Length: 441
Image (cartoon, rainbow, N blue to C red):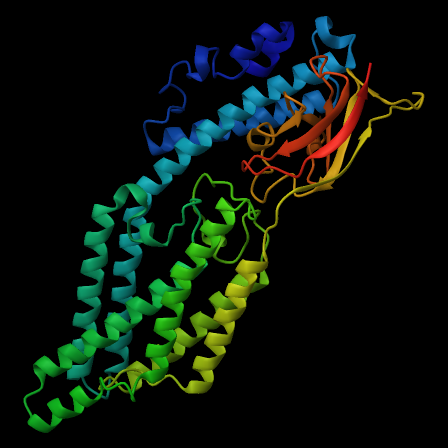
């Protein structure tokens, strides 16, 4: 394997990051024994899978103390630096393959989205056919089916024009390449209201009696659908507001955002690190319940906009307010609380000197979604005028350094003795406060 080929020394790392020894990470025999190139969806997926497996094997071997060349084994700092560089190169390949897989996944997602849309139309047809048994086929059922066909056709056309960005999902994918909960909720309500209006339009076009036409027109009055219209206006406003709030907090360095490789359905209920969040879950669930209720009311009364009771509408509005408050409360700027000299067992107590390791304690050093090695390797500590990349120290199943609360870095010889300031730059590009330390000769 490529990992085993690297045991001859540091200069073999280029062979480790490729497949079959091809330079620059290009696979040897790209289409032999399973495509690993990024030119096709299968190749992107297979290439990413292999890169991840190779990185995990490499990390576990280094964590077990294996694979160090004799040239650096005598020095703890040299071996740590060498291991960090090797892991950084391998993690860079994983990130590159992950981005290629994400682009290929988005490019083929539009077909799945279109298939899902037309499957929903088919389900609607089956439900209408089953409920028509005994009651007979009505003009309302015809209008509902035609409205569904129009909406599905529009979504199919939109998917074609945005096929490189996920088709119909393109408008609800945020700037961080994750599905946006606020945009998804707003999009669902917009589609539902459009469908409801088209049902009324279809019935109005088929109506021959003057009194029936007046009844259908009166069904569009605001008093009939005030609850739905209010909820629609609020959720759309929240989608715009949340985008503005998140953007301002990112630019103000009060919120750390790291771009994802590709959007996932779980993004609707979780934060950037993949953990479920109360604000997102309650907003998505309560909005889904309200949409289902409104759909049932539309099926029962297809001659007017669905009458969403004010009690349920207020519940959705309270849920929306909770969601916005959660967006204001999340995040925070990383902060350094203290910097101390790192002391090994048996070392004497002493001031910080060049060549020593320092331990930076604080909070928020690893942004949500930046737990991968490629993101961790981007962390930098400024000590005076010198930029020090944070070394990756592997342990079984993860990394001992860096962590969200503690960083350990060496003080380079280029740091001038005296009082210098320490500052951490996270993978999201956010800077911490400056913390002054004294470096002695």
